[in-house]
Length: 294
Ligand SMILES: NC(=O)c1ccc[n+]([C@@H]2O[C@H](COP(=O)([O-])OP(=O)(O)OC[C@H]3O[C@@H](n4cnc5c(N)ncnc54)[C@H](O)[C@@H]3O)[C@@H](O)[C@H]2O)c1
Image (cartoon, rainbow, N blue to C red; front, side, top):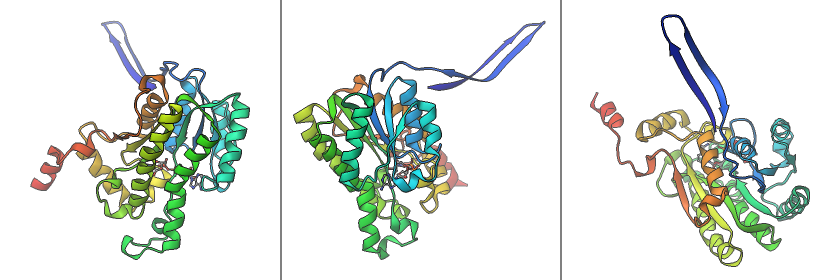
């Protein structure tokens, strides 16, 4: 965890103020662990923050993204910073996934302990198609990228026997899987499918190989994918006012993911875990009541 502390010392003679001092706080939770991190696009990406935190906690990993995303060139900076190798893979291609897993385990020197699926994209959203006017080719493509890719990934890991016992696979999701948020469009359906895959595959992965599979249902977060949702800024502010703890940031999400990759959560599996400052269990907050009382 990167903390900023402010220390003030004062007496009649002197005042010392230390501001913006960045301290590394790591617990070595992932020391010796190996993994693959999907979906770091730029420094705002949840996967980017997670890679930085995993590195701080002693984990080693391969970074991967779709070949087209890699051409944008930003991932190399993260790879350099974290000592990671970059291996391209389209998460909708089982062939790419099998190749990635083979290369990653060879490079890292053994089976994997953690995998992050941080992938999402809706062509309907991108092209401005309303939920009641979907283009089903777009729908199918978005579902393949955002949801079925998780099954493909789990199946490749399972069939290649690529996970160590008590390993942990995490995918990111959003509460639109349970409740309606009109502008989330077909991503709501994709996330419902994704969460179901975590439960269903989690059963078999747990039973056969003692591997955990969970989804984290994250607060709205300012990233490339997040900003693609219509009315995102208004919604971000609304969620902030609704959540007793405020929205969880990408850095907060990285911290939470580290705990799920660690040995401290070995019996947590097949769960959809809300990481949203309390939003999902809040009916209304005082701030929202006050807003409508004006
Ligand atoms: N930002 C939010 O508000 C928010 C909230 C809850 C959940 N999430 C979820 O978090 C995850 C990460 O999104 P983010 O917000 O960090 O945005 P992001 O745009 O930084 O990350 C999305 C990633 O998916 C990758 N991707 C797209 N197609 C791919 C393919 N075919 N193969 C491999 N990778 C592919 C992109 O290149 C990108 O790196 C997504 O699942 C998203 O739905 C985001």
